[in-house]
Length: 612
Image (cartoon, rainbow, N blue to C red; front, side):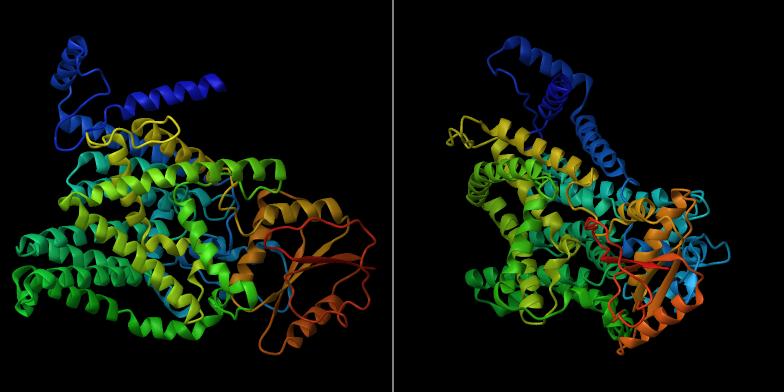
């Protein structure tokens, strides 16, 4: 194993040594005074022109990124949000699942069965009337999943998850272009792409059958247009029409993918206001706002607003389905007011490094935490110092300010929603896609200074680690963090139906009824996850399921449970799973077994009763 990692490190060092430095020149990691090495390098340049060298390096980052995103793609069970993607993308609906009665697993799994009669119109209609997301990604998933055969009669999980994995990999060349255009440096572009390829947060988004990796792709594309607009504002030249039209189109696609893309647009508006303020400091002419670059930017703003207003009626109608987002609402007491700060900080950290600190074993958690803490104590001062060096260059200063403005504005919006509107966006790490590409570009710009520090800076690394080795270590930390995610040791799944099914099989020797309260399709998805694991395991045990619907009166679920128990032949085991209603009266003829304490299972709070 040691030889393997040493070989991998040597290979990476050879690849990374081909990185370009500022401008179009290429400098290998060789002795500048060595005539033989210079001759070799010139011969290499002759055989492989710089354009193809850039293409080769981008291909390396893309291969690494797509390989990480496709590894163990189906090893982790899907959770409720992914089931929503699967069901709506098939043109199906959760409404076909009967409530308040005992049903077989095959009936519960019907929404996951491909429906040849479903059309794109069904996808859009079901999504608009039953969910709170725009339909673009679901339509693309509908077309994509048709290419994959069913898995035991159910939709292919690999097919569903491979689409966001591809979108996640597509963000790698996209951020290369963003970094290159922003800093006019292929080195920044390559280092940005290299870090995007191994970002644990990026891998996390790409390995879920959800729309966040596509939304992040639109964010990177929109930021690229913002960078181009910034250059034209600096140069007092009109924004090309094709850029303006492309910017509006990208923003429209972003709206059609996720409503939170609007937060990215808000950060861009803040940055543009900042740029206008900077120009006023030097000119003090309000006519500046009607100069050529600003007129086109106003047109982009109007076009973007029109593209967003198209979805406003649907969004307002979706507000009636607040029960789908109740998990990010609620009041706070005491130290809970500090939770959003740590949640936001944790997501920022995990964009770069995430070792198995979520493991259930202390022998894994403690060393992982120590390594991560040591890494950040060492790396953060280096990265901040490199950013300060970038700020000293007038051409780069404005771009650092642009990306820092995007990040800081986004975080400020998150806290405004959390503390003033009672919507804790920091609880959903996936929502940070709205500024994720900007973080990666800032990281790439910082690493570029580490790789090729100015001559007046003797050493930018610490603890005896020079700049190039620091870049390699930071990249390797990202790589091992990505491996942590694909092994479900980081960004662990919220639901583990596979473990719950194993527990049922080990505990119950009689027929089984699994009962849960039902309010939205989220609770249906929790049970679909259990039924799916039972089907894939080819288990001889075929439990029945009960989804006891619950309105404002909690007793409605209790009555449905009691009626179902009275209709079933005995004996059987009753598993109450996430059942949030009074049960004492309903289970008075059943007993709690005298067994040892059973394990906690993520996503499934359960109680077992023997009904004799």
